Length: 184
Image (cartoon, rainbow, N blue to C red; front, side):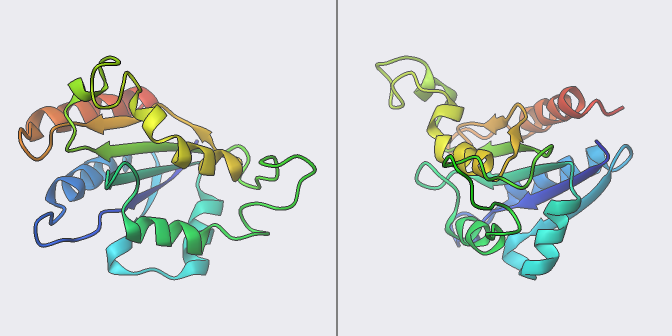
């Protein structure tokens, strides 16, 4: 693995301006830059569809950094995926549904921020009923699988609105990047 594509999928709102996601995004890029060729996109700054498709095609791994909005990706990120993931470029026809992915041998990682505290995932009596972050994000994982990509271990920050622990998030993210991507 030598080429990494990092995407900041935050959508700006007056009440959620994206400083944490921006900081996490920058930390990911900085912590990979010495060991990999890193390309990056900030969706809110605009993009060219063909250029973005080429970034995916050149990447060995894609890292998505985004906040969870209503248990999924923000609108602008969903729109981005809808524009970029094109038939004939990312997937094709297949005899069996879900097996026509063209981004084979590529990996992806989800790095997410949640208002939900980590305890909301603990057991069947909590909001998520004992489901994991990956369980909640299953539609995103299945979309990546549909285009042929394989998941890397994800990273998530919790309780980011009521009880932000930014220094801890950054320390944990750096350790996660080092572990998953074997950086210095």
